Image (cartoon, rainbow, N blue to C red; front, side, top):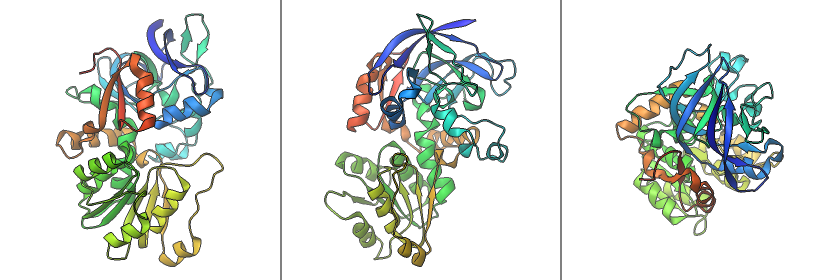
Length: 373
C-alpha cells in the first residue's frame, strides 16, 4: 500500500528544497510509518544537500518527531499511536551494535548518508514514478510522513510536546552526551566548549548539570556567548578579541581546563581545544573537517602532558536509553534546550536553511502540519 506525503526534496547540489507530492511504499517488516509532526534542521542536512550529489535527489531530515501510524510485522518496540523521536540508524548485527555501541555501527556511514535502505532500495517515488532518495539517517523526516527503520525509532511519553522533541535525536544528545558519558565531567571541574551552536550550548547545559565550576564558552558571535552565560558558562571568550588558549589558561590559574569539547570541525579550533587542556586533560571532538583534511595537534606537548583526544559520534549514545534520559532532565528544567529552538512551517524550509547558515537562529525546527506559534 502506498501513502501520500508532502516532502522537501533536494534535486541538485546546493539547490533549494522543493515541496513535492510523493508516495511512500511500505513499511517493510522492520520499518514503521510515521506521521511527522516536527523535524529539527542542522548543518549536516545542509552539508549533504551541498556536497553529496550521489545521494540526490533526496528527502533529508534526521531529527524527526511524530506519531506511529503503521508498523511492520516484525516491529515490537512501538505500536500504532505511539509518540516517537527518530534518531540515527544502525544495523543491529555487527560487533558494535551487539555490544551496545550502535553509534559506531560498522555500517553507520552508509546507513546515515546513502539515502536508501541497506539493500539500495527506497520507499519514496515522485508523481512521475521516479525514485527519490530517503532513509537519510534511517528516516528522512523533512516531510509530512516518513518510512523509518524501527532501530531509528524511540518511543517517548504521551505528554511530550513533539514540536520540541526532535532535536533530541542528534544535536542535543551529541552535545549533552559527550559531556555526560564521554568526558564524564565531574563536580568542581573545569570545561571549555569550543563553538556554541546547538551542540555546544547543550554541552554547556550538561557541564553545569555535572557541577563543573569553571565553564568556558568560545565563540565569535556575541549573542551565542550571551546564551552560553545564561546556560551556565562562567567565562566567555571571543576569538576575535582574545587568544582562546591564553584566555582559558588565565581563567584557570595558568593550568588549562580538565575537559574540552570541540564542536566546530575547524582544524585550527581543534588545535586550540587540545592546547587549552591541563596535563592529563581530555579533549573530545564532535565536528570534523572534510575527508582527508587533518586536524593538527602538537604531538610532543600532548605526550608530555599525557593528553587524551577522542572523536565522538552522536554523543556516544544509545538513543533508546539516552533520549528518555534527556527528556526527563528537560522536564525537570535541568536541560532547557527548548530555548534554542525557532519554529518554521514546512513551506518556510529554505528560510530556515538560510537562517541556520547565517547563524541568525540556533536550531530551526520545521512544523509539518501546524501554524507557527
